[in-house]
Length: 79
Image (cartoon, rainbow, N blue to C red):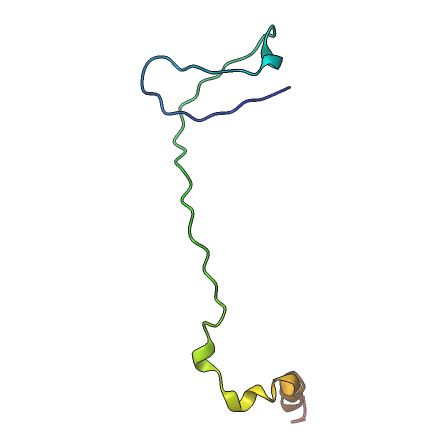
């Protein structure tokens, strides 16, 4: 089954639908429904990249590669 879906604003009592040739000579079902669908609002994409830059401690950046191991050691070495 082939389907064509369109959303149109009705401005008068007639709506014209142009069908492709493959529909010609066939029986078709026409359903008209009112809808409350509005155009989707597209929000611009924002990036969080660099948003925490103000909290960076340049003295600790050199130690980032060992931060996880140090955190585990601090958490578990106190026993």
